[in-house]
Each structure stands twice: as structure tokens, then as C-alpha cells.
Length: 107
Image 1 (cartoon, rainbow, N blue to C red):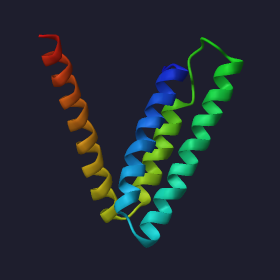
Image 2 (image 1 turned 120 degrees about the vertical axis):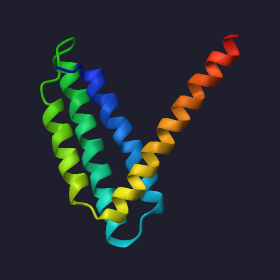
Image 3 (image 1 turned 30 degrees about the vertical axis):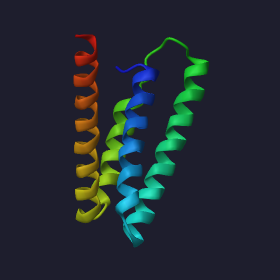
Image 4 (image 1 turned 180 degrees about the horizontal axis):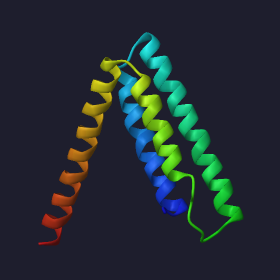
């Protein structure tokens, strides 16, 4: 089971990817992404509130929330999915480049 911090980080990362995709989307796709982003932000706030009540305990809803987010994502059109996949690849590439620069800076 994930911790609250892990749950918050997973949702925050997904929000970032959706925000990048939303910049390129248009019309109904953009509206769907904005709604998904709002839903994810609301869930992140619920996680924060639950963490205050249950400090140090595992977050039992993470698996279900990720499943729900993936279902919402699956409901979007193929065009949005391609945009989101490209944004995920770009985010991973930036992370890899950051790690490389960090290693090189330490040499």
C-alpha cells in the first residue's frame, strides 16, 4: 500500500502530464482534460486532508484512484492520448537529462 506522499506525488505527476497535453488540445478534448485535471486536484486535496487525520498511515485509496484516473484517460479521444503519451515521454526525457547533468556535475 502506498503512503500519502507517494499518492500525492503520483497524482501530481499525472496532473503535470495532463496540463502539458491540455496546452496542445482543442475543443472537447481540451475540456475533457481540464475536467480531469480539476478532478485530480480535488483528489490531491482529499489526500492532504486525510493525511492530516491519519499521519503516518498508508493511503488505502491510491490503487482505486489511479484506476479511476486511467479509466477517465481511456475515455478521452485517441488524439488526446497521443498528446499525453508525447508529454509523458518528454517528461521522462527531461528527468533522464536532469539525472545525467547531476551525475556529470558530480564528476
